[in-house]
Every structure is written in structure tokens, then in C-alpha cells.
Length: 105
Image 1 (tube, one colour):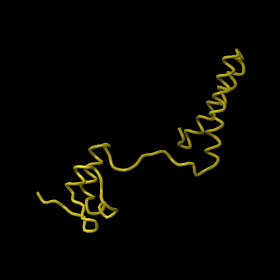
Image 2 (cartoon, rainbow, N blue to C red):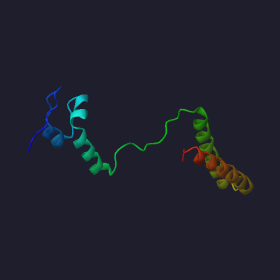
Image 3 (cartoon, rainbow, N blue to C red):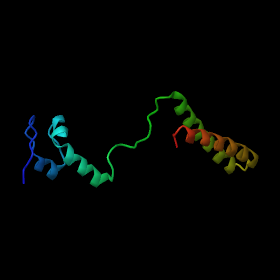
Image 4 (cartoon, one colour):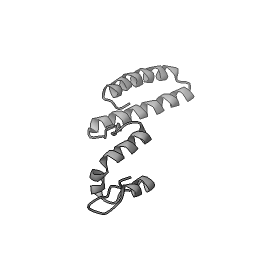
């Protein structure tokens, strides 16, 4: 079998397949097809579907408020303040819908 070699660092495709390590940034170019196949077999897809970073301070504040309300509701339940629990549940549900609309939950 033909063993591809990175023209910049000399790393062989067989070494990458054996260890999973590339030698330099140019290896990504030279072994692109093989890397793609490896990622597909490991992850089932190519690309990142990660969560959105907090670029908007409002998003961070909304998540903080949501967490605070959950804690307050739990405390109200422990203390037997069921009216407060019901009110907090309404606020939590409303905030959850907003977070969902923004793609944060």
C-alpha cells in the first residue's frame, strides 16, 4: 500500500493511523481524507455541534437568573412556602422558554 508522507514534517500516514497523532499543521492538509474517515468512524459525523459561547452578556445573566430561581424554589419547598413555590415555578417556566428560544438550553 502507498504510504502518504507529509512534505513538511515527514510524518507518514501509517504513523498517524497507528498513533492518532499528526506531526504538524500541514499534516491536516496532506491526510485530510484519512482524518475525515477517522472522525466519521469515531464521532459518527464531521464537524462540531457544540454549544454557543457566551458572547452576549444578557445570555449569561439569564442563565444566572434561571439558576437562582431554581435554588429559591427549592428553598421555598423545603420551608413549606408553597405559594412562593408556585410563583417561582411560573417565573422559571417563563425564563426557560426565553432560554430555549435563544438556544441556551
